[in-house]
Length: 452
Image 1: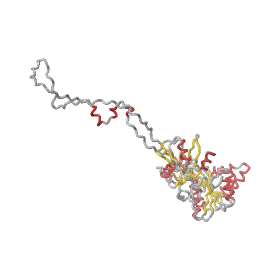
Image 2 (image 1 turned 180 degrees about the vertical axis):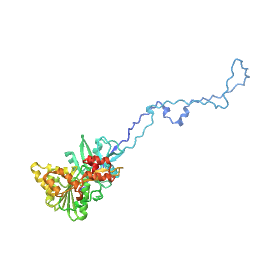
Image 3 (image 1 turned 90 degrees about the vertical axis):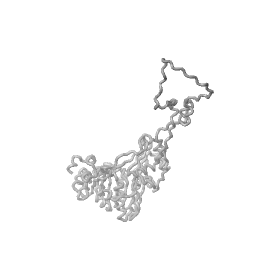
Image 4 (image 1 turned 135 degrees about the horizontal axis):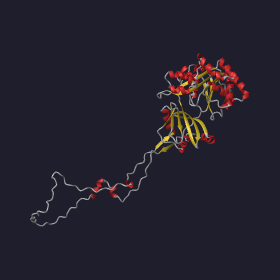
């Protein structure tokens, strides 16, 4: 996959209002005269010219009615002439305020700051400062509010000419960026109220193991299967791509096989170890998920990873790949296992849904729904999982369309590695990893939380 070298255009933010310099008022020279030069302007008594004095005449005795002049106390110092009162400086005479140095900012600088602070996302939105998502919460960076022209300079400067053309045509663009001094990022560029805005997802270069992510041990067993369909579900930002990367990394370390991924865009980059891993990116290496899946079957794959099942054609092709003896991993934006089954079946026309139920029931291996929940004390986030394993009871429920019974099967089949989301939340709460409020607000049946 070709990297997209960023054009590190930056922009300048003034740090405060700059007062324009005022013309000097020449009419008030004293206000602008240095203090050391003002002594010549003080009203000191003038020296009398020296003349020849007449001989002194004896003074007459004072008349009794005349009062003798009052003498000042000897300790009092002689009075000094008061300095002239200086007029208050006018606005024109105010000292000039030097302009603060403008603050320069670049996209690379913002992304580096996001990585250094451990953020998962960086958001550039008009009218507010750049925002980070830290432990699930939005936190502003110490910058002024972004304006339309600022965001366009930052974002468009990082795109190639082909990417700019695609964005101007579709007003939506998904891509990946990589900076040697910042890292790798998944990027979505979009328009909002007539302006360009962007969201950057930080992609860790290190691929963590299944156990280190906190996923249940049964996920390791799922990764060792050879045939079937596995679906990772959850809302945006719940760590689906990270979990898939951990599964592929385990396969890469344990098996000799051909792994082909179809992603939009490529996030985690895998190195060939025991397996050969081919990573194909949408709009860079292939035109669509469905188009890539139709041709991937002729590329001798053992494991196929589909970034997302977005439409009917992609779901149909993924099911066909699982039916023809391949191990398939993919994702959906659904909150739990039950809704995942309903979503897959409901995409098909009514006259095809019965056949689709049979296909799903025969090819499904697992459904893993997950959430990321903040750990109290700003100590990161922890994953909560719901896992459905396709045993005989699950396959029969899917085939007969009674998906509402799947929850009961997960409750009673914990010995097979199944777990409900509510049970996972209760366990994390008992371990002190999440708060009671987060557990209650995220569980499916809050009224039954205490009895779990």
